[in-house]
Length: 554
Image (cartoon, rainbow, N blue to C red):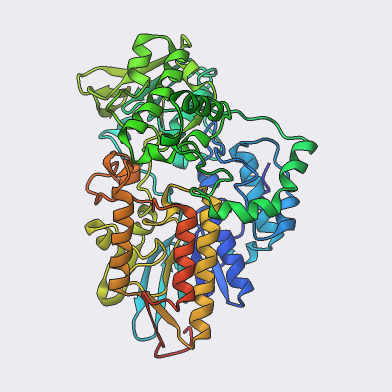
């Protein structure tokens, strides 16, 4: 159990600081540590009652890694890495949360964190070059640098259907699952959504509920997870690889330990099939992230690999009705152009007598009624509990929900309602000294092992602040020309992929009215890192630095 006594008393925010970090997940914790090491008076705040970010909020049944545990780690400190031992290849939420507590306490970060504190507004003072930040607790903070480590999937779409307030049972979003859990045993439960999160919930609760009704709109390609336990031998194996992993992971295409090594055109059909079978048997995301990169660009290659996965799924389901509902069809979308989930007996859950799959593709959910879920044709499914795995306003959502005002009264939310634009996914023209991680137009928005990319981004931000100060300046902002050039490069790279042609949260199409753009940089994690480093080495030519009218944070 986690020690809740550590969070009972709220640390007040200082009124004047050098840097304020929003969020205490993987990015926020490391960012706070680095800023303190830089000698800054830095502080962090979080709406949650403790650290963890994604792994604080997403405590729904079955929540776990689908990145291997030994690569979803900080690599800046060998002892920090080696002094923690994982119990299995893909551990669950509770163990992940304990790991983040271990990191927090090891680095003594709590003294500079205010929990149960939500940033409500931030306004940039162009004369002083400072941000004035307000919170829901009445704090007013003046800071030179504002860093949003708010997460790429942390703005849940909670109000998705008319009538939700009328439901007489319990209704929860997986991204805000109650800390005390829900009593589901013997209940009639509905799960809405079959993305990566919904799949974890469904496969976990199917054996314990009386009746499980799953509403399926978009069937998913799924890969079976192999999750061996780790003992001393396995722990020694991955810990001995620390130097290797630290050297290689940041430069792979997706920030995992594996990378694309095969070329489709160079191989016979028989050899291609052998490779697909070998990688499929690995029980990881390797088929998606390290088989054939051509699947993201070539429709024929995409279709062949997609059919390979569909074949595997059909063989497990057997039932023609379930296959029709749960297996993507040719022409829907290609394998890998959506987020690919790992699962454990997910498809087999639908073979249970107490589980029903309901297609809402052509007969969508019309509303939530007091008794349950009502479809467009008038059918009502009566349930006791509704679990909504209906997704997030990805990338831009969390920061856009804060009233952030930049130069000339520019509102970040309004700018992103017009067009999703950033510079490197870390800054925005018109918003000086506002840094961000996990934001649009960087690999961390979707296509990366998150710790790999978040470490890189926070390190770049820290070095940028160091360089600003060393130059005798206080303020940095991307130029319009610099941002335009990055957006153009991002779009040219993304538009060459099949991802851009597919409706999903990767393109923002799950949020009505959100400007369409591939949210994640698709040029590769290693390439992105190189581009970021080159900009810094060249003296930030795409940015403007300046001296504030006052050097005091007051």
